[in-house]
Image (tube, rainbow, N blue to C red; front, side, top):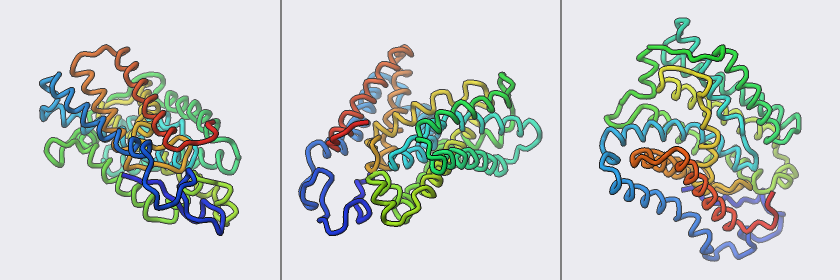
Length: 343
């Protein structure tokens, strides 16, 4: 699980290494921090036990295989978005990227481009291109990330719907479908394996590279990072490109899973990805959290949705429960930071 990153970049020179609350660096973690760290795992275990008792099929091999695929796609959509939030920004175009990527891929498959490797590369290129546009508008146009990606959310959703001509495009390419629903490892869908490989790459970038250091530092105190000579605009562009790539891969796998791309493709990905990030314990204020916590958030959200379906809960009941879970998670995460100002 990711921990808070404190570096020389995020505090003035000559000051001691202290926690965000002003306590000595070696002081024990507060109770709220402990709750923030332990609560997601405890909640996941409680959900598994509850649904195992209430629904006989919950722990069946078929259902666990289904959960693996669902979690894999949501995790992909959330990985890049997590680093954007860690940097103190937000990417609202995740769902539109998934929609546009799926529309392009479904159209190309029906035009004869059905090689899985080619399809993967197309998803990466489309996602990276959209992320680059987001990043340039945000970082160099100096438009707040919320506004920039809110605009591109509409723009790229419209382009995706234009590609689809407002209707669903179906395809029968089994090689592409196996990218998502195939099982290289028995009872684990390939979507989960691709997500785990991507997770390893993103985790390495976030925790073992200078780029990752800058992402956390920008989320902690961007002004100090700029004074240290870091080209923050370049870092912002890169995190949005990364978010675009992971959202594009999510769109590809969702399209492959369904065997089609339609106007509603990815309609829930944006809210579900933000929910998973918050539930995992990454602070929307920036500087705290990471992809390790997002994994827990994704598992909680996926198990919750699947379990509620298993016990026959109505859609509106599921929406209410998800909303309550997000609110509780956000309260604990923000309380543990003790921010003086909440925007």
